[in-house]
Image (cartoon, rainbow over all chains, first blue to last red; front, top):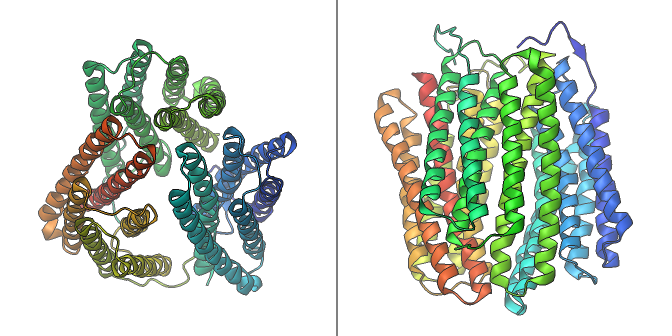
Length: 208
Length: 208
Length: 208
């Protein structure tokens, strides 16, 4: 398909940074919810709004991608990156939603830990994404990717430990159903951050 | 890889319309099952057959895609569209399967609602797909995509409401396990319709 | 993005064979665990190690793909194949992990059956992958793909039957939660083998 006479250039970095900016705010809301032990209406709505805002930026990236002839990275990497960054906010929103639907109240130590690891991972993603603006920052981008991978392993071990404890100690099946899904969803957010790191590493490799 | 001297043209619209035709029939079977409150053998087998037939058309599209040099839309969009249309029928089949495996009997008001929303969404997908034949129908395609997105939001809210009710009122964990999955699967069908709408919007954007 | 003056050729078959080699070992560990009815520490760690080793080969393939100008198959098919082969080992590792977290002990007849079907499917994938080295083996590759599809149908029916029995006979919801997930995960491994078969069939089609 011809992208009709539009050899335009476009800088996608700003839009990626907008997306991850929403993820930072969403992760901060999640930590607040976990630490307060309650899904207050304000924070719930804030996360929902962030999810919509991030959706719009993702849509804008896809639109630009179709209109732009010269892209800073391979087209498929821009597409994948926009999608995964959007997925971070989506999945934080899903988790917050589950906490509300399940009427979870009270501070859960492991959820607080998870929220903190998620926030760290999202901050490392910020570092990786910002570093893509200038290939002189390649070392910093690499370090961020290593950190994101490390945090995913931390989350994996946390989920397995806490799932084990749940099945060892909890007698109420409905409580098991709820918390099994909550921890699983929390871990999924770290998986998506790791997917972002993989795409970023691919972009670095191609630039090398 | 050279697609050896085969600058053949092929019209994919007919095959997409075949796929969504099977989805229409499958969605109608699902509604029948929901409204009758029983998974009768005939309807169960019909859905299974539709799933196989749709599989074959999908396979045919992928085959044509590899043999065709000039495609009406970007190759990756054809691939993605065929896959998602196939997924609609697959997931309706999975849902019907779950209803049978869980031995669900009796009319459930929310499932009837879900089946009706799914049928509406599939009909909107028909409108979107048929409109792709002629770019003069672009307005109708756009309207169909907006409607598909709206119905996905309706389904999202339905699932959250009904999951909330389930965890509030149902005391039997096994019943919770079953219906939680059924409503989740129903919502997934609407998600896939929305994925189709996104691909169609991408195709429109590139034609613009 | 220019792949700077690097019209290098690279043979990916060896790396695909390494990946599927790890899957063979992992599937054999799974069968051992199922037949002994216990997740012994040694076998558990072995599977974990295989998962890491396969990860590294996958990473190597992706790296080579970005550095190689002339590839034996379409770039997207190499990428997809590497990813799915990696997913086989990943999902076997997830299943073994679940068996450990759920503290499953005792021989379960259906799990032994599943492990055996998984092993058969992985061996058929070996045949399909090895056949890709030489297009004179196309008949053998095709047969392997048919066999992989057949085994996926076998697994599907097994999961539905055993899920049905679970919900019919098991009274303890926590036991249902565990085994429902275990059989689902087992079936997913066969789904991934089928995805590999589809990619291989696509490669054959393009060569035809």
